[in-house]
Amino acid sequence: MSTDEQQVQKDIVQTFGDALQMQTSAALFREQLAEYVNALIVSDFEKLVNLLYRLDVSEKKLRTLLSSAANAGVLIADLIIERQLQKLQSRRQFNKPAEDIAEAEKW
Image (spheres, rainbow, N blue to C red):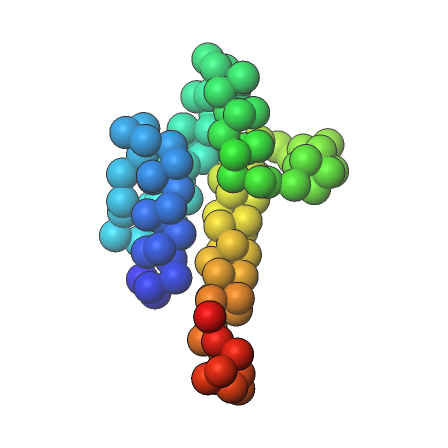
């Protein structure tokens, strides 16, 4: 498993709390996340909506994909993982040290 996949798992586990655990493979984690999402759909939909909002999953994309999806849990799990990967890439892109800034202009 790549370090990106490990970091994504760590971020998602941190957001979801004790409901999820780190897994040895991305496929196992995806399966665990999909099962938990399905459980939330049935038992605590409001909590799921709050988590999706907190994770900043695109509502428009979610609605579009859900209109044709057979397994909502898998679809939502994929969107969560995709969004976390996007965040990780953005953090890397914008946290790079600015090497071309003159020393006098650095804070």
